[in-house]
Length: 330
Image 1 (tube, rainbow, N blue to C red):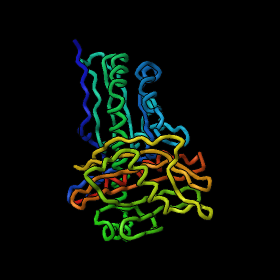
Image 2 (image 1 turned 90 degrees about the horizontal axis):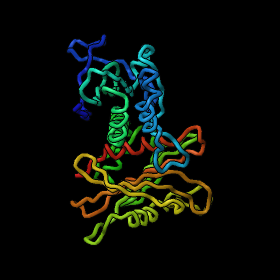
Image 3 (image 1 turned 30 degrees about the vertical axis):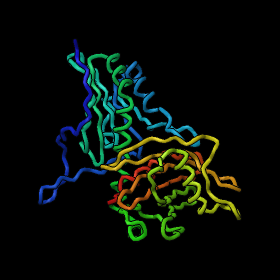
Image 4 (image 1 turned 180 degrees about the vertical axis):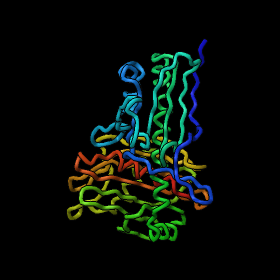
């Protein structure tokens, strides 16, 4: 009986003509493409068959808790004969192949093969139906790997280009290490436990709200508790008209799940925010964790305002999600 196995690992780096310095360090060309965009390389018959349909449905799944539907990934398809030049350096590549001599179905990940940062997923099987079944069975693992790869890229860029005065201000006020990406500005700080910073453009707003509150033996990080605390703190963020302020929308109930970053567990809550007394809103994602050493709950709350649909919201909220990857609490 033919075996089906799943492999997601750091794979070999194939040879390429790249520059290197006199210390032997190899420099890869910069990856092309936009965040959350993927090039799928497959024969036309494979892409239009069961395996291609399955992969397309996985990549087209809607991102949760956005104002308008947006796919998990934007997809560009190309045949192997046309996979050349700039496409080989794309940041995300999936190569699908059917080889009847194979004895197993596999998915292997290779990194920085033709450019950096780059991930190539090699999806191979002995027939298209087996590959389709496998991809559907492991769709969440595949999506998680692809999403985590993009989030780490956002986090790595923030580490290269931090807004250092804000990093120092957060450290001084809260005693935590946090990397704030360049371009953010301090909007309001209320000693000792509230800070609001944001990155503003004419068409978008990305905000980070940091706050803490005392922990207790009876406190449970339920979605109701987190939202109640959120509403108390984000009321310090004014809306566009006099007396208006941010709050959490009750039209769609927020959802909660645990996530682990490093060795720390966070309660992640996703939902929508509104402005009490005015008409604004958008998605938010909030991360709460217990700081045992200081007997407090630390919250990193992030929101996006992007009223122009053509700008989308997926990539903006994903950038915000990556920020928690650079938070360290002793």
